Image 1: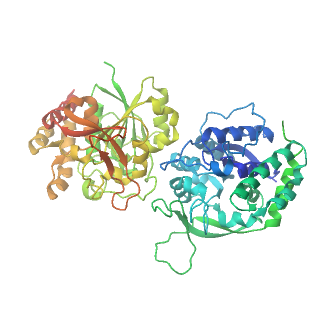
Image 2: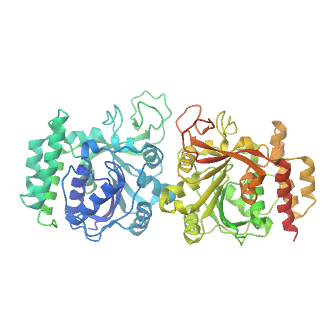
Image 3: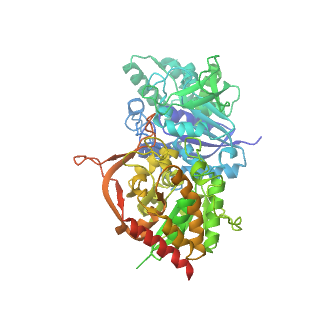
Length: 322
Length: 311
């Protein structure tokens, strides 16, 4: 069977690290490019993290493009409080020999979409700025993309505000452009889904023991320790790895169930700024509703996700480059 | 003197057509490309109208034309048939153009022109700012190669061609306008209050009609364009021609510098170009706001440009 050609648009980010691990370990995915975008941290930091992770996982031949350094029109806000000053909780990875290329993310996405002849899938794990610029610049691009997975939004409550999730809130205009651009399959994996994978720290340690006690095991342990300390600081004992669920879902149709809906992003309201408004058909249709444009992720097979995570780390543990 | 390299982004449009006529007549300007955008009418029609104008001028092979975006970044397109008619340029009867746009989109053509240019390039947007905003988002590294953005749009005082608080071009795509005004590139804003002062009278139209085939074309454009003005008791203003005229001879205009931001949130003020004229404002003065026009000299420049086509 042919591997699926994919692009990963990302802002590492601790959960992005695990998302890239799952993708790198998969024998079903052919990663054509990684496109960094400012989000969890400022652009320079997330780009450096992408470069280091590519080398760590020996993702030779995977392009890294130059992405957007700030949102389309709203003010930039990062999530340093979650992911640390450097975006990876202070965990130091070996410094990459190779830097990103100067070609812009939107141009690489278009080139790779053409090359993949209708089969390209994109995982968007940060704000949707790069994807929005791509569909604005290339109006023929949406019809060339097979599937877009978005980690973002929520059908329920948020994390940066009562109703908004960070990635969408960080660039709501970009998100609304992408949701409405005509890509035939947009899978929105929101907080309502990723919270189904909330595990406590001991449970994560069990899942991640597959990474062994070599170099990968040490890095993974440091990341979990950081997240555990941070969660504890917020009075929590558990957490989830949002982005990793998305790359796991790309190669596994059975992982998540979805329902189609009309979804828009609130860009004006002060209190609901960045909310993904899911018109979920409860019979109360005062607002004008469009055709379904987004598949909203609904239920997760948690055991399946845990075994994918373990298996991915198991597979990578002998492969990391230090 | 070196000619100023310019890229015109337009949505013809009667006044766009006259702006193109002036730009292509002037030996001060070097029109490197023309890009079309949806605005006064659909992209298909504004492109067709643009190529018609070039064909009337006999310059259809001289300047590359590329099609841009067919709808605003965010909102659905709202076209203005009451001002420009069904075709977007009703009035003169001109055969359909034979030439076609180039085989790349507006943003790609602008990138090519700017990358290949040794000098910095001036952008002249006279429609909604969708193409120019996308160009800037997609090419942050090219911003230093843009000399300035000299645009027709906005309203520093009261608005009211798009809504009670906003001018049509900005109102059509306020998000794109927001990108342009926050780009850090120097902006000259020919707002609707100033361009209303750039009007011709019946006798000017008749003088142009007798001048040559291009003058006749201009007069026929104005015959239709003035219908709306007469109906609403407005002057016969040629808004878009101001942005081109300023580049040919800035001394025709009086301006001041101010901070301008574009509102994209307000229910009543979406697309308002919020212009801070306060003397004690500490905001960066990112925009040269045109306040007044020496009307007779503007009209004379129009006539001089049209005369060039007699040669």
